[in-house]
Image (cartoon, rainbow, N blue to C red; front, side):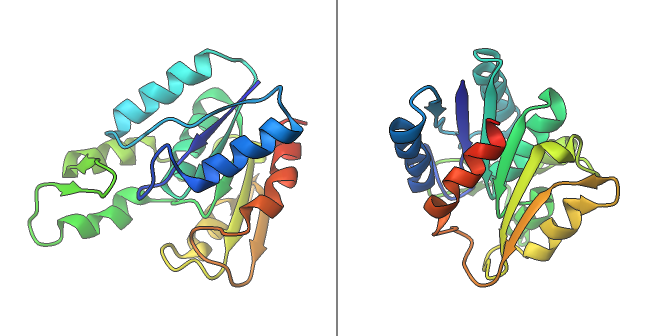
Length: 192
């Protein structure tokens, strides 16, 4: 069994949340291998990397944070896996337009990904207006998310006929600082 942690836009494979998941599994579920790839890549390369990792183990589950939640949603749609999403980005191709408002042709993140407008089109190709296999998604949201409007994810993942398991909590932030408290709940959903 394996768990793939898919980090967000401003993170990388050294993500604290990924480390928390790896530490928890080492202590409580050593049978689960935690993969933490560096996905600061164009969307097509991210999906190719995830596909390679998923192909290694039929018993794969995902945890995706922010942009990683968007990628995890696309993986669930394509391969029918289970995933937990932490403050997921629903339409990153829209929210990332801010990088190109003044005619810029590229934007470099602090973690080394050089984003171009055509990559936003690639992200848009992965988007589904209604989540596929919504029942295989657990969505954890903080109302205090200062980066993304939690209501967008709440609306997207609770559509009639495509409802995911939802945990919405007041306060908090985009980082999801109390993730460690939620790991047993997440793991029970992913590997039950």
